[in-house]
Length: 61
Image 1 (cartoon, one colour):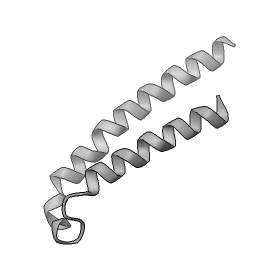
Image 2 (tube, one colour; image 1 turned 120 degrees about the horizontal axis):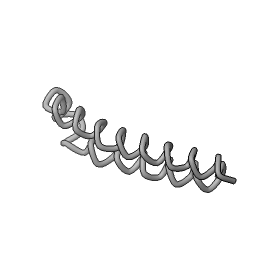
Image 3 (tube, one colour; image 1 turned 135 degrees about the vertical axis):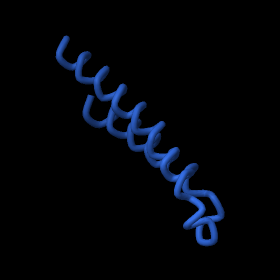
């Protein structure tokens, strides 16, 4: 039981870290794709990461 709690904590930290990093890099290089995505890329990726993290915890932990 304790191993699951530790694994869940580590995974939440990693997901929180990547959830902050990915949209920042997309915003930084977003001007290259601004004509295609109209600056929706950061929100879309954040939503995908958020939903996938919830799905992961519902199915695996």
